[in-house]
Amino acid sequence: MRFALLLLTCALAACDLNRTHLDRVQDRGELRVLTRNSATTYYEGPQGPTGLEYDLAAGFAEFLGVELRLVTPDSLAEILHRVAAGEADLAAAGLTVTDERRSQFNFGPVYQKITPQLVYRYGTPAPKNLDDLHGSLEVVAGSSHAERLRSLQEEYPNLSFQENSELDSEELLNLVWEQVIDYTVADSNEVAINRRFYPELRVAFDLNSPEPLAWAFPPGEDHSLLEEAQRYFTTLREDGRLEQLLERYYGHVGEFDYVGTRRYMRHIQTRLPRYRELFERAAEETGLDWRLLAAVGYQESHWNPKAVSPTGVRGIMMLTQATMKQLGINKSRHDPEASILGGARYIARVKRKIPERIPEPDRTWMALAAYNVGYGHLEDARILAQRDGADPDKWVEVKKYLPLLSKKKWYRQTRHGYARGREPVRYVENIRSYYDILVWLTSRDRKPDTPVSPALSVELPAL
Image (cartoon, rainbow, N blue to C red; front, side, top):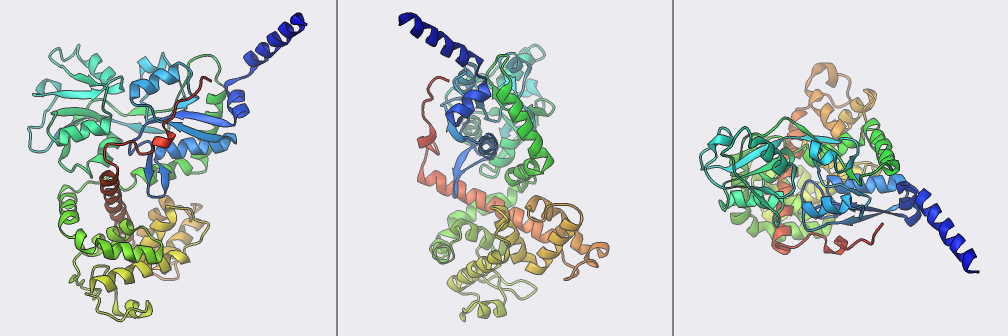
């Protein structure tokens, strides 16, 4: 009997050894992914979990037919340690592929390229190179930036820096802005997003040429899960979803207006409190996010109830008198409550026209474009996109065709003719930035210095 049990145990052990990494993921029905809380990776947004890495990982789990389980360790060093030890299936954390890391991990396909940048605060002297640093330089411990700086110490023997094992890159950017430290190094995508929140941040120079980002898989010869990831990213590129995701998170942050951003932050403090309750009440009636409505109101009038445009639209939401009457509102357009409610109802009405098959947030961006330029012109741009072989249900595609509505060659092909098509594109991009800043501020005020999703920050059993 004991001999039979021993044979059975050995047989089961042999079977377990023959199971690939992909087999184990599919058998447990769960993909275990390490990530970090940040604007470039994963965070809890107004509609739930979001972030580029979250969307990519969730899509991969669906591709495999399993559930996604996210874990947010306390530091980058812990993420790297745990994936190297095989305590997770992969790390999706905005990881730069470096020579040192290649010797420790298997990397998946490159999905984005970033540039490491030396960041300082406006109002202090801008360093020209690493010999020109006069103050404290801190970077995230175990990061590719620390690796790069160590390699540069041969060229710049006076270069000194500290590795911070307690704070992440966004927190170090905040310390530079608060003038607690003088410099840090951050990836260009993190800088682009965070300079809207900390307008005085400046880039002194690039530390290196563009570098690839990729998922890190445990080391070893078993590449079964990695090969599935390669197939997954191939489909993302071929059907345009990867481009769409990158546009969703970075398409509106390419250009930075310091003066405009600083003015906006000031108006949030001085003007918005007078109208916030009105935006919240309008949002409750229409089902829209009050911060989105506030962002539209700021784009339209800078929250000025007396605003008047050369075309005759008036008020915080800049509506025509005819539109107000159609919406059942008979008060003056200069009345803040009437204008905000009218704008909210009009956006909701336009959004209902957008085909329901179009997913969020593209449906909202298209509704805002239609609010600005007219629904007919939006449809013209979508038809042009479709005729050209592009996807008319993706904002990343439609926004390429809207500017064509000002060119005779193109608008002659449309039903509604000429339109200043560049305006709705810039209009939507501005609102997206204003909205992001409001979400960041209100989320920060509600949950200061706490993880965005502690329920997902759990310990993993051994694989």
